[in-house]
Length: 96
Image 1 (cartoon, rainbow, N blue to C red):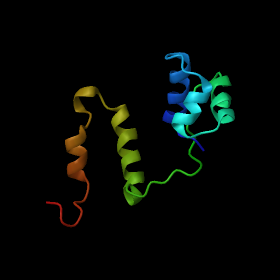
Image 2: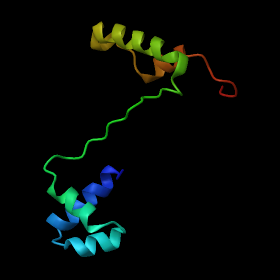
Image 3: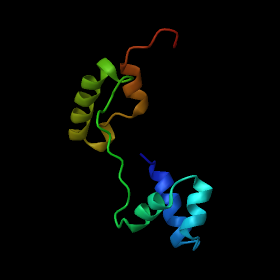
C-alpha cells in the first residue's frame, strides 16, 4: 500500500510540474502502471485505519469522554482548559 504523501507526490509531479510517467516511476522506484493508476484516480486519497488503537489513553479514555461531554454543555467561561484537565489526571510514575 502506498502512503498518501507518495500518491500526492505522483500527482503533483505530473499535473503541476508536467513530469512524464516514466521519469516519475524511475525516480520513485515504482512501476509505470502504479503511477498511471494514481494519475487516473479522481478522488483524493483517504486513509482508513482498520483497527483503532488507544494504547496510551487506555483506562483514561472513558473518563476523558465523560469530561468532554460535560464540558460541551458548559458555558465557555466555565469550560475546562488543558491545564485543568491535566491536573485532574493521576500523575504517571516519575512525572512530578
